[in-house]
Length: 391
Image 1 (cartoon, rainbow, N blue to C red):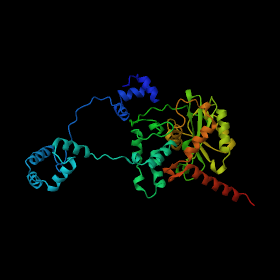
Image 2 (cartoon, rainbow, N blue to C red):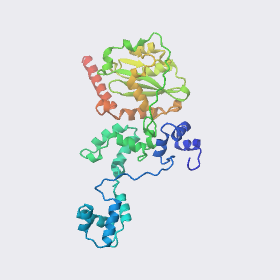
Image 3 (cartoon, rainbow, N blue to C red):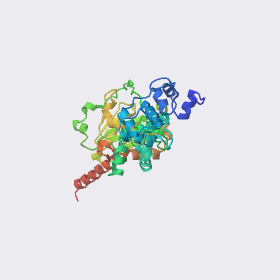
């Protein structure tokens, strides 16, 4: 906007909503967002010099040194008069008198002030290999915590290359690293350029589905996540809520199955896709399914009849009862933004996104990946089936 663009034009260039631009400029956390992009709108104010420790020479002391040198007083005498060590006066002349001629106290004061901050490069700015690896991980949409953990495996024994996840967050918000392909902090799940207070919205209860099992009826051991084969499911909605992607998350391994639905989101199409996706799994890996109270599951009884898979429904306005699925939906939103037309999404794109999510190291899995953990469950299921079949 300082270059003459309107708010709408500037927001279009940055790829953000015009309301976000107004918040940056005038409202909540606006100044912080602009400062991070080098567009500080605040008027400049004179800032008084910070107090300096008495162990450093002051400007008055440097003036005194210059006056005494003019009358050819020895360094030891000057040090004694100032109550300083003679080596302090000697170092002062060596550092802040660039030539062997007259000592200038005001120039010496400026030289000392420039050196005092001793600025240094951050770890990410000063290490090309480290920065490249961090950017590669972020470009795969790993979280900063996952990247922080991966650095210890990528650079074992090199503690100077180990970063806290907060360091990576600050680099993203400060725009000092720019992951590909979208750049800056847009690769974070929040899609934000700066930190903002989290707002809460009211959740509108959905219509109750009749003849359905409630989540309170689900076996208690499902909540422990110790047994494989219990799934949570939901939809992420596309443009005008007319298109969607189905997400199924296995509770124990956090393994994701995802596929796009044709436009319309009809319950009979949903039924057929669920039977096809879960029917390919061994019976021991499809024990229960927990779903939100959406009308797309109106034919849940037919899914249960075809697969022997009981479907349990969450309480109204209680998405936290499908916590794994809600978290995974947030991860998938990094690939498919709100408002996208999901009916045109190629199945390969959905599989690619699911594979990347399943391939990430997860803290909740002791830094294993969901794909590796679910593969172990498949092997165990195959062995159990072989033992059950005689011969």
